Length: 305
Image (cartoon, rainbow, N blue to C red; front, side):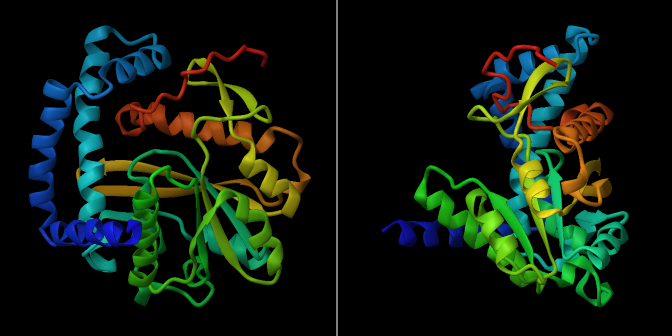
């Protein structure tokens, strides 16, 4: 039954996605108004997160960011629906990498590269970083398998839909790869040491459990997941930060920054701290485009830095 319902949901989303992007943005304007002024979706969470992260801002400035955030959040939703039915060329016009050669150069030396990113910009459009198929070079990272690491959704239907959407993206860009649950990553990396591949991890979720690192992030003590660092240290992978900026509505720019060419050679905590530093830099440069509605600091953390 779950697979049947997931298929129905996917078909409905696909039909909606056939509409032009400008129509999606029209609907987005309506939805953002409803979320902000009628539903007031997580208004307190968004406001408090911003106020604590930027204590130097006045309430009027915070309120303006909140207003722009609702529109951005709604845009992301409709951009991802639009993405389903449109070509690789269309997607790459929306989201493209400035310096994909950085990852290419690391893959020439290492068979595996770990790409870490945050919920910044439209993280679901990372497929656009590969560029157009016709422009790929033989040794381009996008010509090799690309694995998206994720946490299984609580809803079985949502989980099936997500995996189906992601695999549809791989087919669209003629890319090999699959979505992996976090506990499968090490096994997949060590299973074929000679395979050239990139692994993408979103590392700014709530850090559950005890094996986390506390860093000063956005003006407050914050627990950071050490999963990416653990993987890099165990496997000696190169680690690259993927930063995404929203240049304008319907246009994202991706830029890669090397954190380390070999995770096994770094001191404990270096990779996690560097990731947090780069993510905070990008958030401060464009305060609207991070996932402020996420209850990132719902757990009080001691400032043992």
